[in-house]
Image (cartoon, rainbow, N blue to C red; front, side):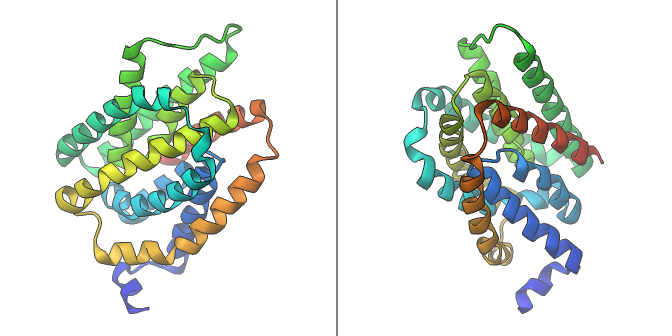
Length: 250
């Protein structure tokens, strides 16, 4: 395929792209955080900002699978509080990112994810599981999720923190996240095309080639998640988020 030669990738790099697509499919239908683990790899291959345009269509493909399967499990009261602020965060990320280079991108993403992991672990170790209800908390999480998803497709850590704090059951966690991610990812597309110019016809054709890996991952994610208990699932999310930080800085 001649258009694939446009990217001048090695066999190893193509393998990384395929594994990322597979992991994104797994992540969106249950194994939340697994796809995020591979995002820093693409940031290394394509560059921080350019990789976001490669990954975004893959995320939307996987989001559609997740919404189709978990659409009835969404908690819309959570989404209503979170989504408007996430949209604002996306706009802020679009505007400010023009003054940020790739290395600064990675540092910002890493710091936000580290803070998210620390708060996650703190909440899990508390004897009393209080559900934060203040609108300021939802606003802060929404802004952070919108900003991180725009600058690096790494909203998973922040969103997971918020959904975990809401003490949502496993399926509701996935269903609510599925609608949230599909909404913000579709909202980001025009910014990537017209402002950042990180999505082109050539990059989208490469994403289409990766579609089978997305589909396989999505089906595997549904099958695997049925076997995980609620407590194991929560620990898995925290572990994957922490691993993302290590890989991002490495």
